[in-house]
Image (spheres, rainbow, N blue to C red):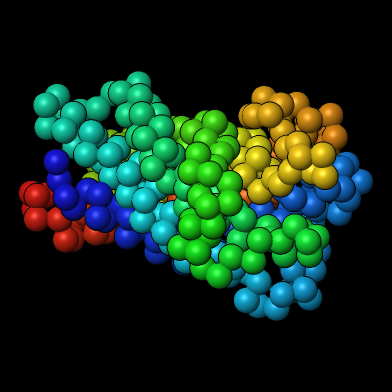
Amino acid sequence: MSFYDFIFAGMSGMTATSVIQPIDTVKVRIQIVGEAGGKGHDKSPFVVARNLYAADGIRGFYKGLDSALFRQATYSTARLGLYKYLYNKRTEAAGKVKTWEKAMMSLFAGFVGSLVGNPADIVLVRFQSDSSLPLQQRRNYKHVFDAFVRIVREEGLWTLWRGSGPTIARAMAMNLGMLTTYDEVKERLNTLRGTKDTMSTQIISSFSAGIVCSFLSLPFDNAKTKIQKMAKNPEGKLPYNGLVDCMTKTVKREGLQGLWAGYPTFYVRVGIHSMITLLVQDYLQHHFNPNNKK
Protein backbone atom coordinates (compact mmCIF):
# COMPACT_ATOMS: atom_id res chain seq x y z
CA MET A 1 0.00 0.00 0.00
CA SER A 2 1.45 3.36 -1.04
CA PHE A 3 2.20 5.54 1.96
CA TYR A 4 2.20 8.61 -0.28
CA ASP A 5 -1.39 8.13 -1.46
CA PHE A 6 -2.62 8.66 2.09
CA ILE A 7 -0.18 11.37 3.17
CA PHE A 8 -0.92 13.52 0.12
CA ALA A 9 -4.66 12.95 0.56
CA GLY A 10 -4.57 14.29 4.11
CA MET A 11 -2.35 17.23 3.18
CA SER A 12 -4.60 18.27 0.31
CA GLY A 13 -7.73 18.12 2.48
CA MET A 14 -6.10 20.15 5.25
CA THR A 15 -4.91 22.78 2.76
CA ALA A 16 -8.41 23.20 1.34
CA THR A 17 -10.01 23.35 4.78
CA SER A 18 -7.66 26.13 5.89
CA VAL A 19 -8.99 28.24 3.00
CA ILE A 20 -12.73 27.55 3.26
CA GLN A 21 -13.27 27.33 7.03
CA PRO A 22 -15.20 30.67 7.24
CA ILE A 23 -17.56 29.53 4.47
CA ASP A 24 -18.11 26.21 6.19
CA THR A 25 -18.96 27.96 9.46
CA VAL A 26 -21.56 30.14 7.70
CA LYS A 27 -23.00 27.02 6.01
CA VAL A 28 -23.48 25.32 9.38
CA ARG A 29 -25.14 28.44 10.81
CA ILE A 30 -27.55 28.64 7.86
CA GLN A 31 -28.67 25.06 8.52
CA ILE A 32 -29.18 25.86 12.21
CA VAL A 33 -31.13 29.03 11.36
CA GLY A 34 -33.39 26.96 9.10
CA GLU A 35 -33.96 24.45 11.89
CA ALA A 36 -34.84 27.20 14.39
CA GLY A 37 -36.78 29.57 12.17
CA GLY A 38 -38.61 27.36 9.70
CA LYS A 39 -39.71 28.57 6.28
CA GLY A 40 -39.87 32.32 6.90
CA HIS A 41 -36.53 32.94 8.58
CA ASP A 42 -33.83 34.80 6.67
CA LYS A 43 -31.16 32.28 5.65
CA SER A 44 -29.14 34.62 3.45
CA PRO A 45 -25.44 33.85 3.84
CA PHE A 46 -24.74 37.58 4.05
CA VAL A 47 -27.22 38.07 6.89
CA VAL A 48 -25.92 35.00 8.72
CA ALA A 49 -22.31 36.11 8.26
CA ARG A 50 -23.13 39.63 9.49
CA ASN A 51 -24.83 38.27 12.59
CA LEU A 52 -21.96 35.89 13.25
CA TYR A 53 -19.44 38.72 12.97
CA ALA A 54 -21.50 40.95 15.26
CA ALA A 55 -21.67 38.23 17.90
CA ASP A 56 -18.18 36.72 17.76
CA GLY A 57 -16.00 38.90 15.56
CA ILE A 58 -13.65 37.55 12.92
CA ARG A 59 -12.59 34.72 15.24
CA GLY A 60 -16.12 33.36 15.08
CA PHE A 61 -15.57 32.30 11.48
CA TYR A 62 -12.63 30.12 12.52
CA LYS A 63 -14.17 28.40 15.51
CA GLY A 64 -13.25 24.74 15.47
CA LEU A 65 -10.40 25.13 12.97
CA ASP A 66 -8.26 22.70 14.97
CA SER A 67 -11.01 20.08 14.86
CA ALA A 68 -11.57 20.83 11.15
CA LEU A 69 -7.90 20.14 10.42
CA PHE A 70 -7.96 17.06 12.64
CA ARG A 71 -11.02 15.88 10.72
CA GLN A 72 -9.21 16.24 7.40
CA ALA A 73 -6.17 14.43 8.82
CA THR A 74 -8.46 11.45 9.46
CA TYR A 75 -11.41 11.70 7.06
CA SER A 76 -9.65 12.91 3.91
CA THR A 77 -6.61 10.75 4.53
CA ALA A 78 -8.86 7.69 4.61
CA ARG A 79 -11.39 8.46 1.86
CA LEU A 80 -9.09 10.11 -0.70
CA GLY A 81 -6.08 7.94 0.05
CA LEU A 82 -8.03 4.68 -0.17
CA TYR A 83 -9.67 5.70 -3.44
CA LYS A 84 -6.33 6.71 -4.97
CA TYR A 85 -4.75 3.45 -3.84
CA LEU A 86 -7.58 1.33 -5.27
CA TYR A 87 -7.63 3.38 -8.48
CA ASN A 88 -3.88 2.98 -9.03
CA LYS A 89 -4.00 -0.74 -8.29
CA ARG A 90 -6.82 -1.27 -10.77
CA THR A 91 -5.02 0.80 -13.39
CA GLU A 92 -1.89 -1.31 -12.97
CA ALA A 93 -3.91 -4.53 -13.33
CA ALA A 94 -6.29 -3.58 -16.15
CA GLY A 95 -4.74 -0.52 -17.77
CA LYS A 96 -7.96 1.46 -17.33
CA VAL A 97 -10.62 1.91 -14.67
CA LYS A 98 -14.23 1.69 -15.86
CA THR A 99 -16.80 4.26 -14.77
CA TRP A 100 -18.76 1.81 -12.62
CA GLU A 101 -15.51 0.72 -10.97
CA LYS A 102 -14.68 4.33 -10.11
CA ALA A 103 -18.15 4.66 -8.60
CA MET A 104 -17.79 1.53 -6.46
CA MET A 105 -14.30 2.56 -5.29
CA SER A 106 -15.45 6.05 -4.35
CA LEU A 107 -18.50 4.73 -2.46
CA PHE A 108 -16.40 2.22 -0.51
CA ALA A 109 -13.70 4.79 0.29
CA GLY A 110 -16.38 7.27 1.41
CA PHE A 111 -17.88 4.66 3.73
CA VAL A 112 -14.54 3.88 5.38
CA GLY A 113 -13.52 7.53 5.59
CA SER A 114 -16.78 8.55 7.25
CA LEU A 115 -16.34 6.01 10.04
CA VAL A 116 -12.78 7.18 10.66
CA GLY A 117 -13.63 10.88 10.53
CA ASN A 118 -16.99 11.02 12.37
CA PRO A 119 -15.55 11.76 15.86
CA ALA A 120 -13.69 14.84 14.59
CA ASP A 121 -16.71 15.80 12.50
CA ILE A 122 -19.09 15.91 15.46
CA VAL A 123 -16.61 18.03 17.42
CA LEU A 124 -16.32 20.46 14.49
CA VAL A 125 -20.09 20.87 14.18
CA ARG A 126 -20.38 21.56 17.91
CA PHE A 127 -17.64 24.19 17.81
CA GLN A 128 -19.32 25.93 14.88
CA SER A 129 -22.81 25.85 16.40
CA ASP A 130 -22.02 26.42 20.07
CA SER A 131 -22.49 30.19 20.21
CA SER A 132 -25.88 29.83 18.51
CA LEU A 133 -27.22 27.86 21.49
CA PRO A 134 -28.75 29.40 24.64
CA LEU A 135 -26.10 30.18 27.26
CA GLN A 136 -27.16 27.32 29.52
CA GLN A 137 -26.80 24.80 26.66
CA ARG A 138 -23.39 25.89 25.40
CA ARG A 139 -20.59 23.41 25.85
CA ASN A 140 -17.66 25.85 25.67
CA TYR A 141 -15.03 23.31 24.68
CA LYS A 142 -11.48 24.66 25.02
CA HIS A 143 -10.01 22.79 22.06
CA VAL A 144 -10.49 19.63 20.01
CA PHE A 145 -8.94 17.26 22.56
CA ASP A 146 -10.91 18.81 25.43
CA ALA A 147 -14.03 18.20 23.35
CA PHE A 148 -13.15 14.53 22.81
CA VAL A 149 -12.51 13.95 26.51
CA ARG A 150 -15.66 15.73 27.66
CA ILE A 151 -17.91 14.04 25.09
CA VAL A 152 -16.72 10.60 26.16
CA ARG A 153 -16.94 11.46 29.87
CA GLU A 154 -20.28 13.27 29.77
CA GLU A 155 -22.16 11.47 26.99
CA GLY A 156 -20.39 8.17 26.41
CA LEU A 157 -17.94 6.87 23.81
CA TRP A 158 -20.53 6.08 21.15
CA THR A 159 -21.64 9.72 21.05
CA LEU A 160 -18.54 10.29 18.92
CA TRP A 161 -20.36 8.33 16.21
CA ARG A 162 -23.71 10.09 16.66
CA GLY A 163 -25.01 11.03 13.25
CA SER A 164 -22.85 8.38 11.60
CA GLY A 165 -25.84 7.39 9.42
CA PRO A 166 -26.07 10.73 7.61
CA THR A 167 -22.28 11.09 7.83
CA ILE A 168 -21.83 7.82 5.95
CA ALA A 169 -24.51 8.76 3.41
CA ARG A 170 -22.98 12.23 2.97
CA ALA A 171 -19.45 10.87 2.57
CA MET A 172 -20.51 8.26 0.02
CA ALA A 173 -22.51 10.84 -1.97
CA MET A 174 -19.62 13.30 -1.70
CA ASN A 175 -17.04 10.78 -2.85
CA LEU A 176 -19.24 9.51 -5.68
CA GLY A 177 -19.85 13.00 -7.02
CA MET A 178 -16.35 14.31 -6.38
CA LEU A 179 -13.89 11.56 -7.25
CA THR A 180 -15.81 9.65 -9.91
CA THR A 181 -16.74 12.88 -11.72
CA TYR A 182 -13.22 14.30 -11.48
CA ASP A 183 -11.46 11.28 -12.93
CA GLU A 184 -14.16 10.64 -15.53
CA VAL A 185 -14.22 14.22 -16.85
CA LYS A 186 -10.44 14.43 -16.76
CA GLU A 187 -10.05 11.22 -18.77
CA ARG A 188 -12.59 12.34 -21.38
CA LEU A 189 -10.95 15.75 -21.75
CA ASN A 190 -7.53 14.15 -22.09
CA THR A 191 -8.87 11.92 -24.88
CA LEU A 192 -10.71 14.77 -26.61
CA ARG A 193 -7.76 17.16 -26.45
CA GLY A 194 -4.98 14.63 -26.91
CA THR A 195 -3.25 15.97 -23.80
CA LYS A 196 -2.37 14.62 -20.38
CA ASP A 197 -3.75 16.35 -17.27
CA THR A 198 -3.12 19.96 -18.27
CA MET A 199 -3.98 22.66 -15.72
CA SER A 200 -7.11 23.70 -17.64
CA THR A 201 -8.25 20.07 -17.76
CA GLN A 202 -7.75 19.71 -14.02
CA ILE A 203 -9.60 22.96 -13.27
CA ILE A 204 -12.59 22.06 -15.47
CA SER A 205 -12.72 18.55 -13.99
CA SER A 206 -12.51 19.76 -10.39
CA PHE A 207 -15.17 22.43 -11.04
CA SER A 208 -17.49 19.77 -12.48
CA ALA A 209 -16.83 17.54 -9.49
CA GLY A 210 -17.81 20.36 -7.13
CA ILE A 211 -21.19 20.82 -8.85
CA VAL A 212 -22.11 17.14 -8.72
CA CYS A 213 -20.91 16.36 -5.21
CA SER A 214 -22.49 19.46 -3.64
CA PHE A 215 -25.93 18.65 -5.05
CA LEU A 216 -25.78 14.97 -4.06
CA SER A 217 -24.44 15.48 -0.56
CA LEU A 218 -26.20 18.58 0.82
CA PRO A 219 -29.40 16.86 2.09
CA PHE A 220 -27.26 14.42 4.07
CA ASP A 221 -24.96 17.19 5.27
CA ASN A 222 -27.99 19.15 6.45
CA ALA A 223 -29.27 16.18 8.48
CA LYS A 224 -25.80 15.41 9.80
CA THR A 225 -25.37 18.94 11.16
CA LYS A 226 -28.72 18.89 12.95
CA ILE A 227 -28.21 15.43 14.46
CA GLN A 228 -24.65 16.06 15.62
CA LYS A 229 -25.38 19.39 17.33
CA MET A 230 -28.65 18.33 18.98
CA ALA A 231 -29.02 18.44 22.75
CA LYS A 232 -31.70 16.90 24.96
CA ASN A 233 -34.78 18.99 25.72
CA PRO A 234 -36.02 19.61 29.30
CA GLU A 235 -37.87 16.27 29.13
CA GLY A 236 -34.58 14.51 28.38
CA LYS A 237 -35.47 13.64 24.78
CA LEU A 238 -33.47 14.27 21.61
CA PRO A 239 -35.27 16.05 18.74
CA TYR A 240 -34.37 13.45 16.09
CA ASN A 241 -34.30 9.65 16.07
CA GLY A 242 -32.07 9.29 13.03
CA LEU A 243 -31.48 10.25 9.42
CA VAL A 244 -34.98 9.55 8.06
CA ASP A 245 -36.69 11.20 11.02
CA CYS A 246 -34.50 14.28 10.71
CA MET A 247 -35.12 14.62 6.97
CA THR A 248 -38.86 14.08 7.40
CA LYS A 249 -39.12 16.75 10.09
CA THR A 250 -36.97 19.12 8.03
CA VAL A 251 -39.32 18.81 5.05
CA LYS A 252 -42.40 19.32 7.25
CA ARG A 253 -40.87 22.36 8.94
CA GLU A 254 -39.01 23.99 6.04
CA GLY A 255 -40.45 22.43 2.91
CA LEU A 256 -38.60 20.14 0.49
CA GLN A 257 -36.19 22.95 -0.31
CA GLY A 258 -35.14 22.86 3.35
CA LEU A 259 -33.01 19.81 2.54
CA TRP A 260 -30.95 22.10 0.32
CA ALA A 261 -30.95 25.07 2.72
CA GLY A 262 -27.85 27.17 2.14
CA TYR A 263 -27.11 25.54 -1.21
CA PRO A 264 -25.31 28.58 -2.73
CA THR A 265 -23.03 28.74 0.31
CA PHE A 266 -22.61 24.98 0.36
CA TYR A 267 -21.80 24.94 -3.35
CA VAL A 268 -19.16 27.64 -2.90
CA ARG A 269 -17.81 25.78 0.11
CA VAL A 270 -17.75 22.35 -1.53
CA GLY A 271 -16.74 23.62 -4.97
CA ILE A 272 -13.73 25.54 -3.69
CA HIS A 273 -12.80 22.80 -1.26
CA SER A 274 -13.06 20.13 -3.96
CA MET A 275 -11.04 22.13 -6.46
CA ILE A 276 -8.26 22.91 -3.99
CA THR A 277 -8.20 19.36 -2.65
CA LEU A 278 -8.07 17.69 -6.06
CA LEU A 279 -5.57 20.14 -7.55
CA VAL A 280 -3.23 19.96 -4.56
CA GLN A 281 -3.47 16.16 -4.46
CA ASP A 282 -2.66 15.86 -8.16
CA TYR A 283 0.24 18.30 -7.80
CA LEU A 284 1.73 16.37 -4.87
CA GLN A 285 1.23 13.04 -6.62
CA HIS A 286 2.85 14.21 -9.85
CA HIS A 287 5.81 16.02 -8.29
CA PHE A 288 6.61 14.25 -5.01
CA ASN A 289 5.46 10.64 -5.29
CA PRO A 290 8.53 8.56 -6.21
CA ASN A 291 6.27 5.64 -7.13
CA ASN A 292 4.93 7.52 -10.15
CA LYS A 293 6.85 6.91 -13.35
CA LYS A 294 8.10 10.11 -14.94
